[in-house]
Image (cartoon, rainbow, N blue to C red; front, side, top):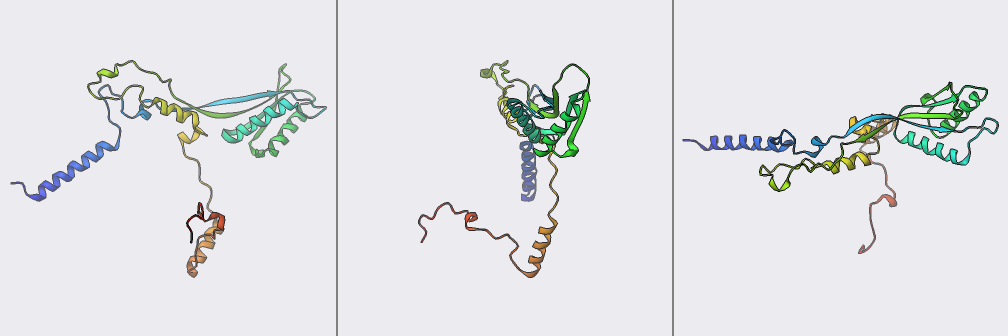
Length: 224
């Protein structure tokens, strides 16, 4: 006769197996997954963004429209650029002035000098070319309605399931590199750590003092 311990042991094993089966997506009869993120993965790939601007060495500047394009381009690099930003000027008497001008402008806009690459090139194009590598995220196009959803006797998910969500994530992610790998953490604040330890050893409050604006109170209604 099966005793109560055996019954409890069998029930526990069944619960573990049931929890394990719910932990991951199910594999359907056609080999696909019930998880939309698996069936419609987000692909991250690098691409080269570039802009060409007319530069006049005698005036040492850009036309207003080109200046606005340049500032937008650099802001885009600071937001999602990877690696260095390159500045290529055509060979000639004005190449040094052009490289110096754009190098200074980039530094003033917050680009570290170590990430600025300058050089000259041959050719008939007199414009200065600026470029950087960025990453883009995309998924395969949605709209796969190849199966009759009214006859899914196996209760499987549609081939198009989850595609729109994946498309939205790929379109809205600020930096596609975050999908591939996590960003490095900032170094620890040694000074703050020492302050907290000193207060802890003295039995003092280690949290920072909050002002009235940081109280978290929404309103003073019904306060006595």
